[in-house]
Length: 398
Image 1 (cartoon, rainbow, N blue to C red):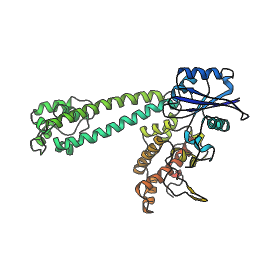
Image 2 (cartoon, helix red, strand yellow; image 1 turned 180 degrees about the horizontal axis):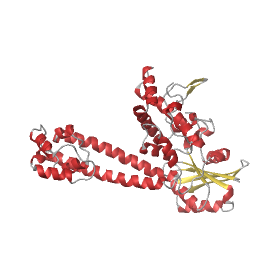
Image 3 (cartoon, one colour; image 1 turned 90 degrees about the vertical axis):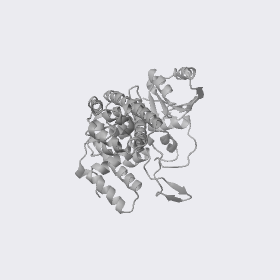
Image 4 (spheres, helix red, strand yellow; image 1 turned 135 degrees about the vertical axis):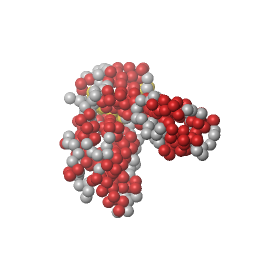
C-alpha cells in the first residue's frame, strides 16, 4: 500500500522534491542538483521509508527527466511519468482545456499522484516510453528523406528533366546510375551496355525504362550543363541512400523492441482499419499511454490536443475556437496522417469527410472532424480488443 507520495519538478540543472503523506501532510521539501550527487542525496532522504510504500511521480520533460527516472528505476523505486498538461489542469479543471493556471511545482505533482495513483501506470526499464526515441528518430529521418527527394527532383529538373518525367528516379537502379552520370551530358558519354549493366546490377525493384530509352532521352534533352550542380546532386543522392540505410536498420531495431512489449495485438487492431499502415499504427501505440487511462473519448482527444479550445471571458465561455493543440504533438501529427489514410482508403471515413466538406468545412477542419471520428472508433476497438467492422464504425457515416 502506498503511504508516501513524492512529486519531483524537474528542470535542466536541478529538481525540486516534495514528499507527501497519504494524509496530505508534507514531510519533505528540498531542491537538489541534476547530477549524481543530487541523485545520491535523494536516495539518502528516502532511505528511511519502505520502497513498497513510496510512489515517485515526475513530469515528462522531454529528455530532462530521463536520467533521474533511469537512476530511480535501477534502484527499484516505483515511478510514474505524468503528462505535464495533466498536472497543469489538475488543480483548476478535470480536463485538458486551455485555462489560466498557476505554475505547478513538486507539491502539485505529489498531490496529483496521491489523488490519481490508482489510475497511473508504473514506469519500468522496458516500457513503451523507452521505444519512443526510436520512433521519433525514425520520424526525423523520414522527414530528411522527404526533403532530400524534393531537392533531388529540383536538381534533376535542370540536369535531366526528361528522366524525371518518364521514370521513378528513386529506385536504387536509377539512383546508382545518377551517381555515376548525374546529367544528360554525362549519360551521353556512356554506352548503352554500360547503362544497362548499372540498371541490372542493383537489387530491389527493377526499372521499366531501358538503357536505350535513357540514351535516346539524353540525346534530345533540353537540360542545362552545370558541373557544380552535378556535384550537388550526387552529394544529395549519397545522403539519401545513407539515410535510407539508417531507416532500414532502425526499422529492424523497432521490430525487435516491439517484440518485448504487449502492444503488438493493439497494433494489429489498428491496422485492421483501411488506410492505417504499419508505421502510423506503431507510432500511435508507442506514443499513447494505455487506453484504459482514459474514461472517455473526450479525454483522449484532449490528451492529443484535437479537442476544441475553450476561451473564457467573464461568465461567457466559447467552445468554438480552434483545436487546443495542448496535448501530445507527436500523437496529433500521427492521428492526422491516419485520418488522411482512412479518407483515401475507407469508404465510411471518405463519406464522412465529403459530408463535412459539403457542410462548408475547410479541408483541415474536415480532416480534424475525421480524426475525431477515427479516435472514437479506435477508442472502442482498443477498449474491447476488437478489429474494425465498417458496419459498426460508430456511426461514421451519420
